[in-house]
Image 1: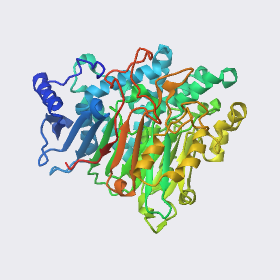
Image 2 (image 1 turned 180 degrees about the vertical axis):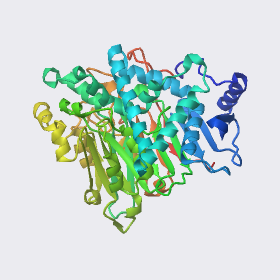
Image 3 (image 1 turned 120 degrees about the vertical axis):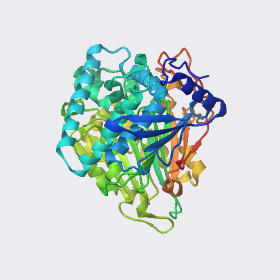
Image 4 (image 1 turned 180 degrees about the horizontal axis):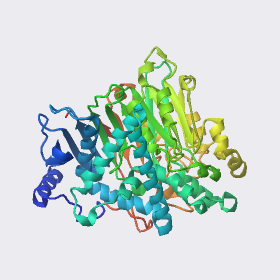
Length: 546
């Protein structure tokens, strides 16, 4: 049973749109839309129409969240007879997304706001707003002043963002219009984790005065994801997978396929498929498949050294903006890492894995540069080729920095000294499980299995902790249970990734005999519009031919 939706989240021309949504729901059909750019930058949208001949952008949206755990959005922009600027192409793409996914945007915003600010002061909210306002002003000024390819492509991302905001607010009634901060919070979800302690030093934890349960709660709330790149013994195939960890209230998922006909010859990626959320122009997880031949995965690293947050300033480019820019512009892992180092915001501090399919010859060799690993903290971005490690069989990622300098500056040595070996790179629970079980991956099904793995009641490496597993279930903890943990998995291989195709599942893992998660009165947190119970299967995600 779906949670209660906002009844007033509706488009103008209610009767026609209501009929369209009614037909869509009853028939299980997708919603189609076409956008036309008119004079003075105005946009006309026709719902229920896929005008490939005359439309400037077309899109389809199939919302099956309560059926299989996912909505699927396809957006194609800039392929019609009228020649548009690259910024207009991106703007129209964002506009259509804002129109088609508006109800889910509103619901997800309400749920997300509660995750970050429930029980927090208005003073804190004001400080975060001030940071975002200053950052937006600064980054737009930089874009106007520069013709550098990075800034040029960043301008495309900002155009898509502006279109998203406009498309949403042009087509909803006043009670559910969202201000710019709502969209900053949505797209800056990951960045907000680090903006809060930067603008509000009193929120930085004092681990010396926290109990083990409090520390575990903090770490699990800030540990975002497991990832694995696995190479078969004779290089017959390469598998790439990612499992997201966050609050279960964030499980309103949309898998997105973008196809933008950007004319700029510097652009490397025009087609991109990725797991995402309503109102986000990035993955957040991250899991991207790109027609440049690059695949990007990401897991979040903790920052235990609170003084690093003094380096976080609004005069910078947010992580989500740099990621999208790097994805569009980079042709290899080295370039990708260099772009991430441009005006590093020090927010959403992650380990990024860039797999270059162009440098993999199945059954023959894996060339240098096939795997670049990029890590960011405030004040530092490190990037290097780690293909040698991948050639040995696998690359795991589990929320602990790989690079010693990043590990040390982030405060891990001191934290591990006080909290134990679980916080070391070599002996973290997931490091041990990956080391033991990665060799068991022989095919797609075994790759799915390892990324959904949780046998905390029996696995000696888990020691009874449901979050000491590849796919965490914090809701099952004996002490401090919360609706938090691993809530999805995306898997692809070399052949599928070349076609921007993956398998994806939404919902907390069933692990080894675990009960499906269901919302109950036990957890007092907003979960508007979400499924009541999560017992879904993997879904095949592939771009539609529009």
